[in-house]
Image (tube, rainbow, N blue to C red; front, side, top):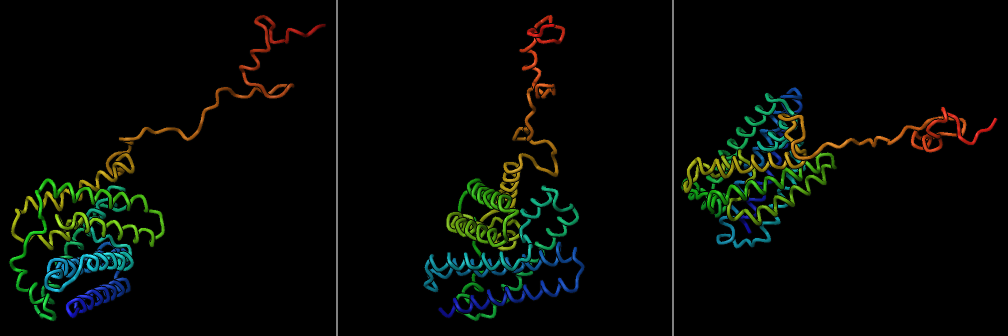
Length: 307
């Protein structure tokens, strides 16, 4: 359990450091620079560092630390809850930033700035986490530090199958985000944490279920076993395709690119009446009712009238 305690301390220190950097950046930087760069960089660094440490526990913990799958899944769920509660609105995920751009919620310069911040954040997190492993504070860290230069690929299935898994999980994630867009933050955080934990349980053994192109590039693109093109197909094209399909299914179009609905027919919310009321001395009548009470040659007078 000593190794687990060291990892828990690492998680707490990561959350505390990133939270402090967010508060400092929010106080010192303009609103736009904080929202589209500093917040995204801190969120991506927090996610990247915790992902690397958690991946080390998943790979080495069962045989070197005696950790069971129930403990690891519980820890994943708790980490995802804390992430959702502390990101302060940051996505820390390129596909979520691209989704906001396609929904016309963010401009192209802001989206590019977010993507650059996310890439910078996960790369910095990777360098700092590997430096922390080199200190050898636990047996697992010593093993991980020795194995890291010869890391194995997170992709343990065929490339088409891996791309399908990453794309399907990303499709469900973005569909949930779209559905809960106007709901309470606690509901979104809980739903996303449950969904990502389920994805880690099902697709994790085959692809690690990153669902995040920047995170996957930082963690596994440097590992041997597959080419760069194969990694791009699984961890970039798969999630982006899943996001596009989710937006298209939910809205029927890509709002940034198409004004007309591509999937669903537009129906008017208002029902057009069949006949307009015709006021008269006897009350309101529709044209059909009035014509039934008149003769063809009455000249507009009722047939029963007498002089």
